[in-house]
Image (cartoon, rainbow, N blue to C red; front, side):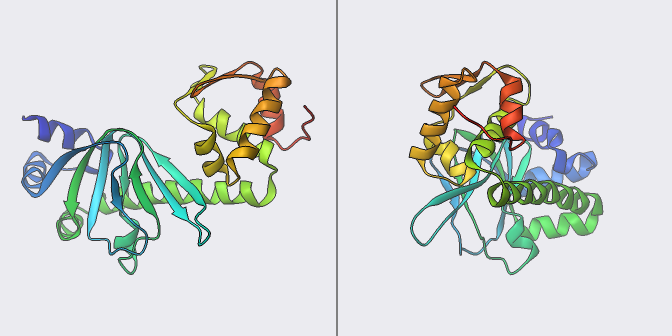
Length: 226
């Protein structure tokens, strides 16, 4: 089995395919290695391509008429993006940008349609993956509607430290602000208050969680006083 077939066989979306179907897929897809900062597609563009992220990080975001950026979600390996345009009017509603060097499988939507007709399990996997992303987006929207900025930032830090390492690496104050729907200055102020309270320690693109229980209390929207 060549490297491309191995990669395809490891992806969640294609795990139900037979060896013959994987060979067909291998002939109808391309693998691209893209640099950080590459824009895969923009809002209002037609969507005719499905992307499967194998390695790296991709952020989906929107930009307000005033130019403010709001990150909808960040995708890691084994994620699918570009599929939402295939479900509706074929128009993207978000931007998709590589926030790290990435490896992606690129597939034309017509190939996807043929694959789904031949193997409905692929369609079910696609719906499951899109459903998980929608659930996450709804959760974030609820947070922005009902939770104060400190609670949103605390919840984000806990989410980014899901493995309980006590450290969040590789995220800037601007990215935190864009993810929770606030301004960079506000995010910096809140993180400074967390630091003064002994809850976190900060360095360049690195946040160490000193008081996880305190962060959980803030994330649950309990009033925070620095």
